[in-house]
Length: 216
Ligand SMILES: Cc1ncc(C[n+]2csc(CCOP(=O)(O)OP(=O)(O)O)c2C)c(N)n1
Ligand SMILES: [Mg+2]
Figure 1: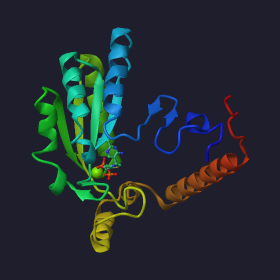
Figure 2: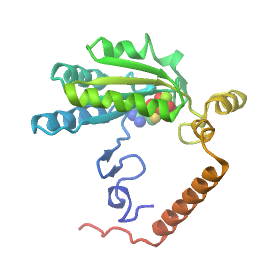
Figure 3: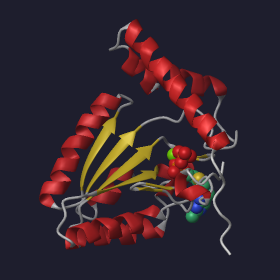
Figure 4: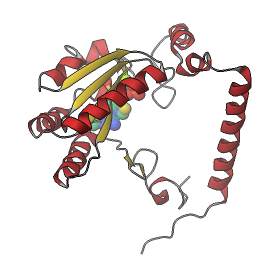
């Protein structure tokens, strides 16, 4: 909503977000060289921080991805690449835009790669945690390729898939009901209440907070 208390001080738009140590970029692949550079800076300055870079299957055709992962491997940069492979890039299925497979793109550069076929946040979290420990301790890149699903359009109601197909994958792979299975009804109700409250507060703050000052 462009408010001064929001991401990027209200100036970033919906794609270019900066919030604490989170950055996003509307240009596919645009985050990859930046994340590799940030991780390299951490290494050079002798800190133990690592960078985590999230990519979609639709980013795999961008040349800058390969320049960047080449450097990450060559210079042994502490970065974890996480590829969210939901087999569709906005409106284009992977069959029409991706030759070969995704893990080989990383192993070709000597980057240790793990593939998960999961919507289970606990499973993904514990695998990622282990990989982050290794990336930090060994100061070397790794990649985590997660085969997953998209339950709606990329952004603007432009999904090209069949509604029945989407409903079927949502019924079997939605991570929220999967997680809820391990909780009591009381716990689920209290989480729902907490979330509702947080969303309402955030909405009200966004309405009430001031716009940023105009720079002259
Ligand atoms: C360099 C560049 N080319 C094209 C686009 C337009 N575009 C926005 S999203 C997208 C596809 C993204 O695919 P994926 O990362 O798989 O995201 P998903 O559809 O799964 O959400 C494209 C081509 C862009 N943002 N940047
Ligand atoms: Mg995708």
